[in-house]
Length: 217
Ligand code: HCB
Image (cartoon, rainbow, N blue to C red):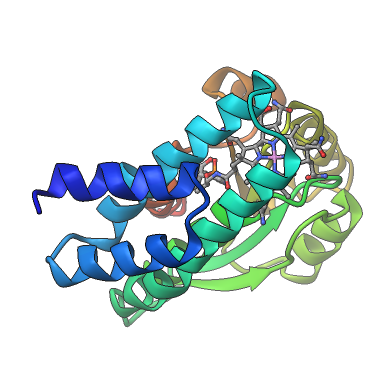
């Protein structure tokens, strides 16, 4: 099977919520020598975008996006150990405190970004989903003096707004100069990052790791 055909089948497996088929195709793609990142960015993620758009257009409903999420998770179970194998050993790039914004439980992209940061030499403190800004600020304070990057995800326009409050709280607590701040997720734009005075954003997990390494230099 040509790579393009495999990507198309992976996308289709996500859209049709074919959990077993997607896991099998993911394994086949790896066996065919396709990189885990290409499987994600060219096969699985486009399927999540399509199902999200269909949800917005009321063509599918919550149970369907839930099952598409589970389908992607089945593939990620196979791919995460592969991504971790690429881990760069040696000097730490710093501590990455990763989290999903308050009110937001979308964690597929967050986990992928966290895995990629770990594979690229960051120590990881993963605070999980629906994290209060107060908790992030507390953790930033605990690690004052270390090289720290805050890596927040928000998939909804509503939860994204909390990133501005977080930046304000960091400034009020005089912690802003001690940490770098990178935010991402579909609604986050460069314009938003500039507006709230954060340091960076990234389109996807591979880019997030590159950008994080760059801002920590
Ligand atoms: Co959800 N949902 N959802 N959802 N959901 C979205 C996000 C919408 C865009 C769908 C739509 O309407 N088009 C929409 C948000 C609209 C908006 O505000 N703009 C939405 C909504 C409305 C909701 C609910 C409110 C629905 C409801 O209950 N009525 C509800 C909210 C729950 C809550 O959080 N409180 C909800 C629930 C769900 C689930 C639970 C069914 C499920 C999540 C399962 C889970 O994560 N464990 C879900 C899903 C799966 C989606 C879509 C379809 C896919 C998200 C996803 O996993 N994408 C999504 C549609 C979409 O995003 N287009 C839809 C795949 C991953 C790999 O991509 O973008 O998350 P990613 O991450 C990338 C990238 O952004 C970047 O790298 C990642 C990896 O490449 N990145 C960073 C991420 N974080 C970064 C941080 C950095 O610093 C840098 C880069």
